[in-house]
Length: 336
Image (cartoon, rainbow, N blue to C red; front, top):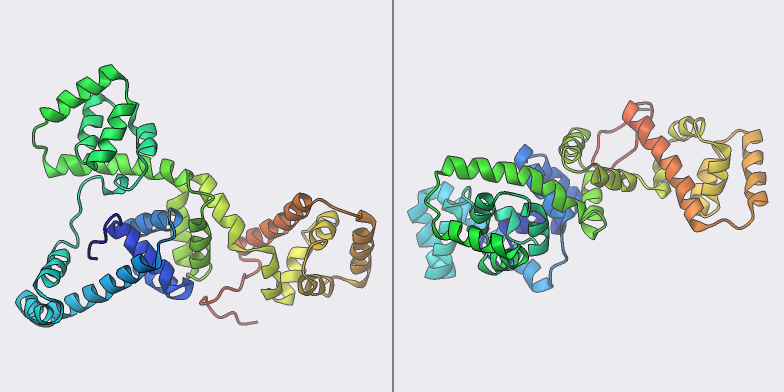
């Protein structure tokens, strides 16, 4: 995609998926390979809200790139140049053609170039001087300068000399170093964003993808950051979604629920959730839960949320075992 100042191609791709909405984004995610899923998932979690003008620019870029690809596929590069020249003018048309021709090319350590220098420093400070010199030589000047200034003075001088005397390095070695660094770095940086709105965006998408894609994404994330996976799973099926379960599923999970947890969880539940659950209890169990709720009196919100999460955990565990099925939009149709 074309260049918008300060926004990388990976970030634009993530923002485009977010703008498409969870239903369309989940369909697009199916076409990603493992590396794509890894990068885009990280960018969605790390997502920061853009101004409207930037969002419009991303959409415009995407549309123009789609046109460019179609023209290239239809009549080759020269044909695309001619058509785009008439439509967008010489400068923009050449930018699009260049972007399309270099679509699969990227500069080393792109994944670090929009990360706060402090985050990068925290990660690379224990690396050898030669490795740090190599990484800094590929980062933005201001970013590299900030990182260099955080290092001890004796290392600053040594690293500066190594940067100045650095010889050309073969693409294979660059690729190997970048891969090792990215595998370590992404997990560490992702941990810093587990509470951002990006997690909620990712959850909305994952709630709409097919189970195969969802499983693949979780497997990739588990290799990176267990705490992030836990955070996402907690949000994947919220307590209020119980109303979307069938009666058989509700009755099944209720058989594993502690009566005290159920009573506490229902204290702050919506009337719809209360009715759905109570109507799926036996007459005796319904009476016990109702009486327990009345005897409880005031309950802390944190205790209610903990009890509700206990129910959600049971539901997700049963879903993973295949004993019940959480109904998700865009998923396979369930035959009763």
